Amino acid sequence: MKKFFLFRHGQTEMNLQKRWQGASFDEPLAYQGIEQAKNLFLKLKGAHLEVIYTSPLIRAVQTAEIVADNKIEVLQDDDLKEASFGAAEGLTLLEVYEKFPDIAGLWQNLSEEGMDVFFPPKGESKRHIQMRIKNCLEKIALKEKRENIGISIHSALIRCFFLYFGVRKKEIPHGEPFVFTYDNHVWEMIDKNKS
Image 1: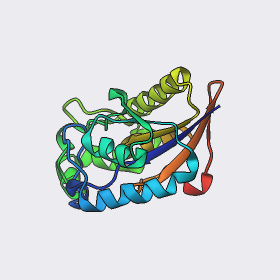
Image 2 (image 1 turned 90 degrees about the vertical axis):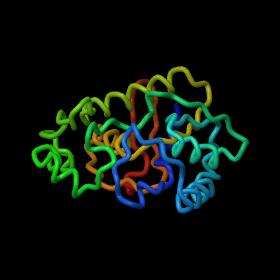
Image 3 (image 1 turned 180 degrees about the vertical axis):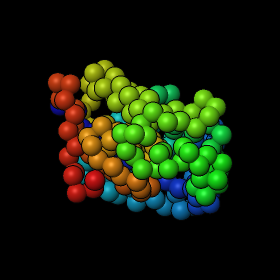
């Protein structure tokens, strides 16, 4: 059995401005984000992480490296990169609603009805994000010999993975671990209090 500890990177300046970064903005951690990553390190001390896989975006890499504390291998995987939000990237939520009134509401409500909407051009749908993160985690589970695995990623990926379990979680806090197990092609969400 593999145990996965999924966590969102620490805050960046764009997070503090409440702007959607998406895949095209590669921002470093702000001071607050560094502190969140340090607190996450303390939260995960008893998890006995053996490896951390991370998105290649710098905010996730920095968070992974702080948690690893030069004692755990950190590996990047392109399939863990933040979702693409098309022309919504760089905008605040208010600006997203103004620019994409028909899409924004469906995107935000996390219903089945909105699973296939995306922001043009070339944005990803929640269904695509969900399959990407699920397939990536399964790929890691099948190839990785180590059992306690950290995953440093982004809010959209975590939110869409929660949807796989029927959990609609609008806010994914920075630096908060969520625990899942994978055993013989079966996923289980461990800490249901965090859903």
